[in-house]
Length: 114
Image (cartoon, rainbow, N blue to C red; front, side, top):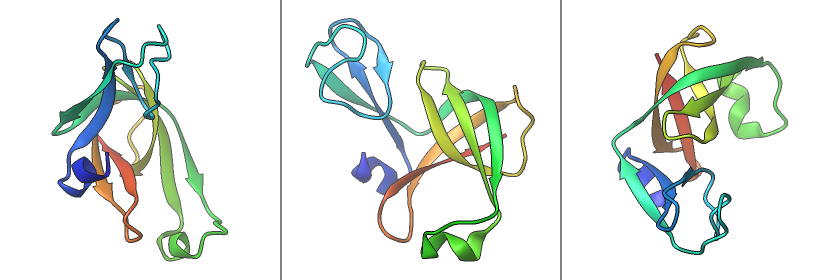
């Protein structure tokens, strides 16, 4: 997942037994408990914004310069729901595109934009 995010690509897991997509990654499929989960790497993932909130305070020092931060829950067209940083303020129910990147600490994060 980190390597895909470093390349600006989004990675999620898909079960080889039942075909279900899952995010965040796990050792077993959440639908059928198979351990035959494989990575699917995409340039981006389309989805729908389910909810959003604006974060005005953070205990994490690295986020403070970027406050306020807009966060959202996005149901990916592949099925799972992901927490994403929002670019702009898309309306709830709007179609968004989710992309992955590495933050300043080298952790993969998701961005969603209309």
